[in-house]
Amino acid sequence: MALGVFMMDNSAVVTDFVVKVAGRCNLNCTYCYMYNLADSSWRKQPKFMSTETFTLLCQRVREHVIRHDLKRIAFILHGGEPLLLGPERLEMFFSIFKNAIEGLDLKITLGMQTNGLLLTEEIGAVLKTFNATVGVSIDGIPGKGDMHRVDFKGRPSGARVEKALRVFLETKYADRFTGFIAVADVDQPPRETFQYLASFNPEMIDFRLPLHHHSSPPKRRAESTSGAEYGEWFGEVFDELIKSEKKIMVRLINGIIHGLAQTPAADHFIGNLEVGLVVVESDGSYELVDNLKALADGITQTGLSVQEHSLDDFVTMRNDWIRRHELHRAPNVCASCKFFTGCRGGYYVTRYDSHGGFDQPSVYCNDMKYLVPLIHRRLAA
Image (tube, rainbow, N blue to C red; front, side):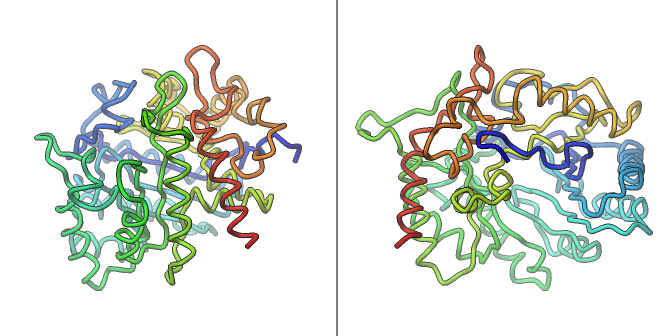
């Protein structure tokens, strides 16, 4: 693979499905790319995906698997907040999916991403029945790391999520929990944040950089001399991680380590291959990866849907869009950078500029120039 070029993962097919079974949420996170950034298309979406639409989607998935002889897929229920479905409707949707793929020689990752408020033992029983897992979105210590994850009255949600998750982890369904998605907040203590999330014994903590880009850059502290607050924050997380006796994967750090080792997994962990998945909105429309909603209104819309188009139709459109926006490769300037193997040019959303597209380094470039060599030095030592 030539330096500066990404290898499109399964570019001829779809293997990863993000299914928006709920078009609304019971939280109002200030940084939410679905509801509070550049895109407003959620207003036209149904509150829930209908049984008919979900059934048709599952038939499309089966057709795609058979046509391309796929051996593995990931099928993730998302939202909005998928647990607004309730346990009975959740069980029905899982049953529809299971029946659709019955008899196929296929490895399936089946799961959901939730804010955790509605986690119950009853939900755990449904997950266990269908061998599904659940990831929870929570940013950090209640009263500190939850100031952006608020409800519609502006109240932080961390304490309520912690209570629901602690109760869930005391049930016989605790093994259904896999880990966290957490948005990094440099105003919160990184070591304590890692320790808090690690106390739940997750398999993975996916600390994510806020979805800023060149047309909406992150705020930097006036007193900062490095301009690399996020790099410093992740550096402290890394130091805490390597001291920990728990085997926990931190996604971005894993990506940098794989990058330094020059393995193909680097782009997976950093997130650049996410652009190849399909998002199915609650009305059945196929959309591009939903993090792009942070950039511009309507940017993810394809004009295609499960009602009228096959997944092959979506693949053709998606690949054309990726190549047109040159997301199959890193920015030109990154190819000659000595840190490229570690950061892979940065997550594609953070490279965006409303005038220049994606052909520039990440808005977090300075942070990566701090973090990549730090991790390299620590590992070398």
